[in-house]
Image (cartoon, rainbow, N blue to C red; front, side, top):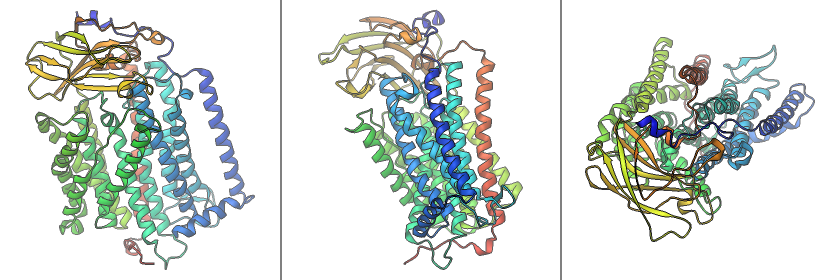
Length: 617
C-alpha cells in the first residue's frame, strides 16, 4: 500500500529536473574559457619575461608581509576569492531553502560568486606556480622544467581549486542522470565545497615555504603575519564547517547525530593545529575570527540586503577552551600527537557538551538527551582522529619531524577510515513500514497572504516514536523569498506532543502558492516524512498535493518527499559507480595534501626551523 500511495507525490519525468539548458552551459563554458585563456596568456608573458608588472605587483605585496612575491600575491588573491566563494555558498543554500531549485545556473546570482571565487582560488594557486623566475622557491619545490620550479603549497592550492571546479561539470552531468538533488550533501556539491575547505591546508603550507624563504631573514613576519596565519586556521575551521550548513538553516535532510560528529571533526583538526602551531590563545583567536566572518556573511544573507532565510552556526568556543586548557599539560610539548588525540577526545566530550548549550539556544533542532550515546560513539573516534591529523599538520608547520612514514601513513589512513565509518553510520536510516499519520487541518486566523493552517496529527502506530525523538516537525520551505512571504520562504514548526502518537501545531504553516509543507519525524535511526501540502510542479510533472481538511497518508523515505526533482529511474549500480568516481577524486585530494605536507617536512632541515616568534617591530 505504501508504494501505491507514494506515487501520489512522486515526480513524473519532466523537462526541468535534469541538467542546465545547453545554451547556459555553452555561455558559462565560453566565459570561463575566455577568462582562462586570458590568464594563461598573462602567465606565458610573465614566464617568457615579456611583461614585468606582475612581478612588480607581487614584490610590493611581498614587502608588506616580508614574504616572497610568489607567496604574498597568491595569499592576497586567495583571501579575496575565498570570502567571495563563502558568501556565494551561504547565499546559494539560502536561496534553495527559500525558493527551491534554480531556473538555471545563470539565473541564480549566488552561483556567480561561487564560480568566481573558486575560479580565482585556482588562479591563486597557479599564480604561486607561475611567479618564480630566477629562484627555486624552497628546497621542497617541484621541478616542472629545467629552470622552472613550483612551490608545493601553490601546487596543492591549485589542485584543491581544480578539484572544486571539476565539480561544476560533474554536477551538471549528475543532474542529467539522477535529477536535481536539492541538498548540500549531493556528491558533486561536496566536491565544490570540499575543494574550497581543504584549500586552506595548501595555503598554510605555502605560507610556511615563504616564511622559510623570506627576502629579509633578519626581519620576522611580525604581528601582521601572525594574524594572517591564525586567520588561516580560522578559515580552515570555516572551511571544514561548510559541510554542516544544512543544519545551520534547520533544513538538514540527514540524521541529527551527524551534526555533532561534523563539529567535533572540524574543531579537532583546525583548533589543535592552530594551538600547537601558534601558541597560547591561538585557538580562541581562530574561533573569534571564524565567528566574525560567519556573522557578517549571515547578516548579509539573512539581513535587509538579501533578505533570505537566516542561518546560525556553531560557536566552537567550548572546543577552543578545552584545547587551550589541555595545551598547558607537559604532554603537549613532549608527545604532540598523543596530545592531539587527547584534545580531540576532550573536544568530542566536554567541548560538544558546551557546544550543545549554544545549539539548544540558537538552532532549530537541539540535541535530545537520548541521542547522546550514539553521538559520543561517533564523535569520540572522529574527534581523536581529527586531533591526530591536526597535531601532524602542526608538526609540519612548526618544522618538527613527523613520525616515521609507516606510522604517519597508518594514522592518515585510519583517520580516513574512521571518517568513512562514522559517516556511513550517520547515513543509515530506517523507514518505518505500515506507519501513517492522520492529519486534521484548520485555517489559522492569521493568513494575510494565503491559506495558513494549524494541524492536529495522530501517528500510527502510537508507539512509533520515543518520548525524546530528534524531531517531530512540520517543515515548510521553498515558498519564495521577499515580499510578504512568511519566514522568508522557510518555516519550521516543532510540534507539541499531546499524548503518545498525538501532536499539535504551535504556529501556523503555509498551504498555498509554491510552498512545500512536510511532516517530518526522526527518532534514532527512524527517519521519514509525508507531504501536507506541495504545490504543483509542471516542470517535473508533479501534481499538487492538496492540504485537505482531513486526510491520512503513509510515511515514506524523506528523500523522496523533500527531493521531488530527483529521478530514481536508473540502475542502482549507476548511482554507486557515479558516487565512487566522486569518492576517488576526494581521496586523491586527501592523498595530494598528505604528500605535500610530507614532502615539505622531509626536505626542510628540522634544525633550522624554530617557530617564528611574534615580532615587536
